[in-house]
Length: 91
Image (cartoon, rainbow, N blue to C red):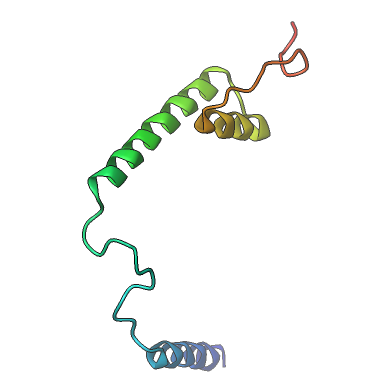
């Protein structure tokens, strides 16, 4: 019984997929149709390097959870978060 239900679901899914019209052109008119441009590649590389540096900094500060997420968000945006006495750990 389960095999029949599974087979019916798969067949109906494939039928629905086959009935959709094929898109010959991309939806965005201004999007590049060729390879990724050099500026996009350099932006991606720069963003990756920045994120790697922020992750390393967060690890050195031993941040976890929500504190790490907030730190990474601030670090990636480039605006440093001011350190308050409530966020620092006292001995």
